[in-house]
Image 1: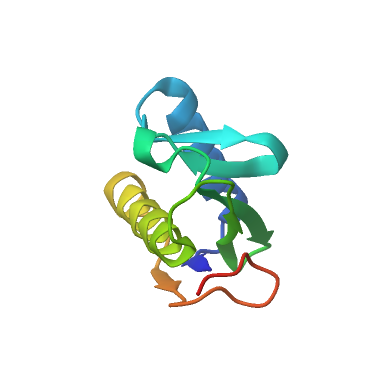
Image 2: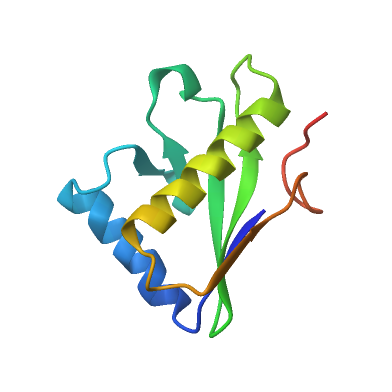
Length: 112
């Protein structure tokens, strides 16, 4: 799980969606069910990040395992690092702290 602490999580999520739609973020796409997938060819169908808004607290993303052949731990690490990179690069003033768990939390996809 990756968490972005903010008292405006809906605004942060909307800024992310708007940046994707406007072409300012070209490495992520929103896929079915409000999940976000990374567009790099080698990561297609390997996994995605599902979003959860905690009102006035945080914007959280949870790992969803994909159907690809890559090691799930590698996919987990890649997606979380790229999401963190994206938010630091594009929205540094919209959150105060971010944290990432080294393994999925209960309810997330499994990694070995």
